[in-house]
Length: 154
Image (cartoon, rainbow, N blue to C red):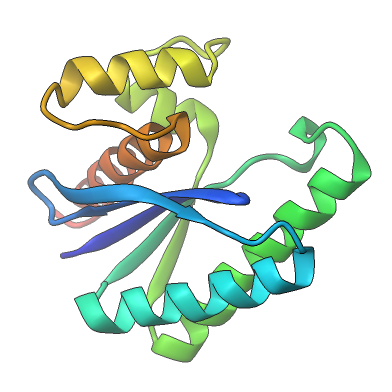
C-alpha cells in the first residue's frame, strides 16, 4: 500500500509511505494567489496520485476552531475540498489524521508545535535534510496513517 501524506497549506508538506518506511518527502510551494494555489494543488495532487499509483491520501485534519482567522479557515476548507475532489477523480481512498494522532506517532505531547515535530523528525530520519516543519508533519501523518490502516486490516 502506498500512502501519500499531506500537511496542507501554501507550503504543502508531502510524504510517500510504502507501508514500511517513508520513501520520499518534500514541500510543494503553492502560489500566493489563492485561486492559483487551489488550481496548482489540484493539478499537482492528481499527477502525484496517478504517477505513483497512490492507494490512500492521508492529510492532517485540523479542526476548524484551530485556525486563527477567517482567511486561514477558508483556505484550509479549500485545501480539504481539493483533496476530496482529487481522491474522487482518481478513485483513491482518503483519510484525515488529526493532530493528536500524528503527534502520538511522533512521540510528542499534544501541546507541542511544529518546531518540536521538526526536531523529532530529524531524530527519527537523521539522513533527511528537511526543508520545513511541513515536511516533518507530513512524514508523521504518513506513519500515523500507516499504523491506522494496519490496525483496521488484520
